[in-house]
Length: 158
Image 1: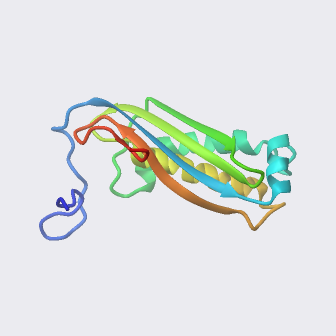
Image 2: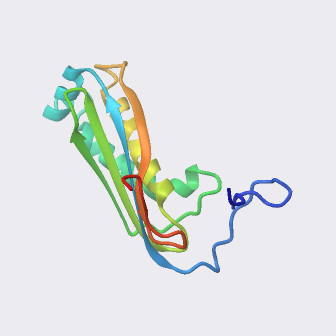
């Protein structure tokens, strides 16, 4: 395994200097799921949740989280995000899939921004629907693909 970039020679956490890196277009996609009772997902789909528009609110929360990732993850670089999208699919009668895509022209990747967007969108779904289903579970949050940068492209599918 390569040396960890966020650990110095003394074993201390460090903020990596990326100033010498090339600015390139970088993109990352992450996904996750919220599993819930069928009636909960039906209410979300129909827009009948007690707190209002669950998916619209969660989409906005995910985009906002992508923009603020550097404030949340201690050694993550604050980035001027060029674009962020959060999408929802009804994978089954009990599973809401969340996908986030984030893009930047920068010196470091946006994997953490995409993962944070999915995580916060999922938490927002929980918050918006917990009045009808406290048994919801959040899981399967993972990086699906990333492009750009020194390490090149990567995809979970390959």
